[in-house]
Each structure stands twice: as C-alpha cells, then as structure tokens.
Image 1 (spheres, one colour):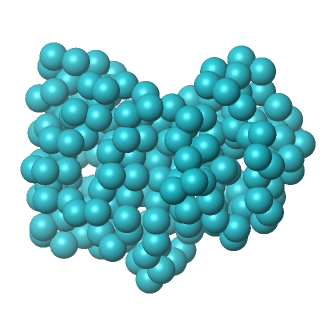
Image 2 (cartoon, rainbow, N blue to C red):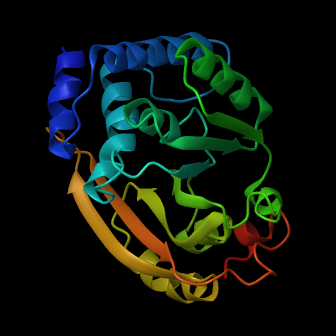
Length: 240
C-alpha cells in the first residue's frame, strides 16, 4: 500500500523534503478532495495512492525544471487550476510564494476556499473567471514571476492564456501527459508573437511508476502585444 512515507520518498527525486506539518496538510487536502468529490465532480482520480502520485507528486515535478523555487519566492498564477493542481501543492511546499488560483467554475473556487482555510494557507488569491478577461486588467497583466497550468488545451492556446500575465523574464510551465515535440513545433510561431521563447522540454516518468510526463518551459522575453489575449473563447476556437 502506498503511504505518505512513499510519497516523501518519491519527492526526494525532486529534491523536496516535507515537514510533519506539510505532510499533514497534504493529508488534509486529500481528505477534503475525497469529501467534496462525493457530491461534486472535482476529479476522476480519487484513490489515495493515485491522488498522491498523479496529482500531488505530478504537481511538484516542476522542481525538475525550476530549481530555485525555495530561494526566490515571488508571485505565481495557476491558470485553469481545477481542484487546485498544481498551485496548492506548490504553495504547501513553497509557502513564501504568493499564489493566485484562477478557474472558470465557481464551485471549484468554493472548494479551494475551504482548502486554503482548513490548511491555513496564507497569501492565496482565488479568482473565478476566464484568463482572457483577467489578463487585460492592469493589476494582473505583466505582474507574475511564474505561471503554471495543467489545463487540457494545445500549447498555442495555453500560451495566449498565460504569457500576458508574466513579467519580462518570467516563466510559464505547461504540464503535459504525452510527448509534446510536435505540439511545440506547431506553437512556436504563437509563442514568438506573444513575447515568449521556449527554454526547455523535460520528458520523464514519475518516480517508481510508468506515468509519463512532459514539462514545457517558456520564458517571457518581450511584452505581449496589446491585442492578446483575444476575446473570451477565441483562443480555444482559433489557436494562433
């Protein structure tokens, strides 16, 4: 049976060691996820081992490509966060980061509000709405050091959602569950238009598993032109 001690062992591959308090927070997070999932659809993955591996561990695999999360806290935004992945696990492990969780469904925001309160997480902002709308607000556009997303969409669309939020020099990390070389190739023009540059593509299996993952790292190198993102719905229907 996969237990918290196995979760900690797997995290060693990402050079992450959890305190007893952090282990308790992950247990509380799982308990809340299971409780709320009984009356609303947050995730199809509910088994304890699968949640630890496919949600928590997967979220924290960002440590493979962003090595200095512990020493350079800043502002992070998670686009299409769903049940809080990867934003909440990152916040638990790296509590000095200021984290914004954005999702288009109000019921998920209610769940995340319960999570942040029960886990006593500070400096977490919960936003209900669409990335296309929030990215046009002066107080959010170009304000973040790191943008993450496990949302299911092509890389061109995700880049249009995410790059406008970043400061120059900031990083966008896209989590993928399949080989992404062809998708990256198709998205290169869009990323360039939006002010980004592909820095890295890391392919790996989650520790002690056959679960394949790919992390794509894009750096913001110039301001995103003012016409992007386009109006809500357009990036999904008509990727750049």
